[in-house]
Each structure stands twice: as C-alpha cells, then as structure tokens.
Length: 174
Image 1 (spheres, rainbow, N blue to C red):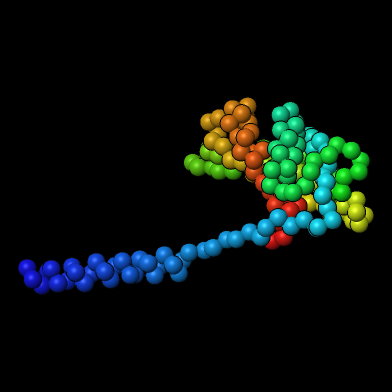
Image 2: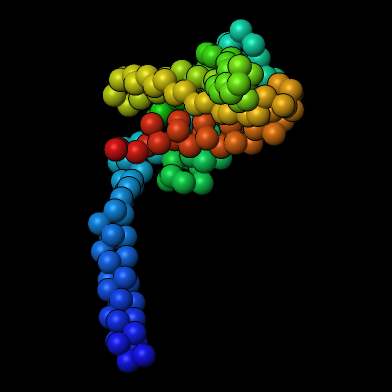
C-alpha cells in the first residue's frame, strides 16, 4: 500500500510536467502585425465589387462590398468617401464562382465545394502606384444539400471570409 502511494505521488507530478513540456513545445504562435497604412493616407473609396463570374450569386457582390466597407471603417483610421478625391481607390470583381466535388467515398460524392475568387485593384492616388490582389476561398458543403441550400447556409461565412482575406491582403504587412 505504501509503495503504491509512493509511486502514484511520483507519477502524477511527472505526467503533469511532461504534459506542460509537450504543450509548450508543440504550441505554435501565429501573430499578425498591426494594420499598415502610410501616414499620408486618410481616405478610402471602396467601389462596388462587380460580379463577373459566369455563375452569379446575386447576394454575394453587394454584401461583400458592404462588409469590406464596414471592416475598413471600423478597423482602420481611414474615412470612407464616395468622391473621386480618395487617397486610396479600391475596386474589384468576383472572377470565379464555381462548384466542384471535394470528397468521394464508395464511388459516391460526399462533399461538394463552392470556389470563389476575387480580383482586387488598389490605386494609391497619392503616389500613382497600383497594387493588384487575387483572393480565392473554398467553401465545402455536404452533397446531401442542394446548391441553393448550401449557398444560403454558407453566404455569411463566404462574406466574412472573403472580406477578412481582402482586408488582410491590403492592410497587413505579413
């Protein structure tokens, strides 16, 4: 009995120390730098992101444009303007909105995927430079759902994910 108590009083602390070591050594830290905006830039114009994809989700373009505008205004010091005198002029288009099979089991489709690509152009009116970005995101859904069901269920995730990716491409220096 005494030997068992002695062993268990040794094993428990040893397990806790080992778990702490493994947890600390396997922990991966991802960090993002702060929003990076040149000091002379104070206004931004986000133009309507047009839908130029062969297949069009009529809700995607207006909601993505609105979400990107809201994100820029709420998370940066930039002021939104609709005039032609903006320091930065952002325009873009949805260039791909397609569907594919993402998973097969027992010779049957189990998962489908909506693929969305956006091409973005940032015109810096202060220095005359232009930057272009291509953002692509995939959204999986069960093959038991119709395309309309999947689009309805995934729309808010699509909007949020694409707006986050666009924002990070433009404003983060990482």
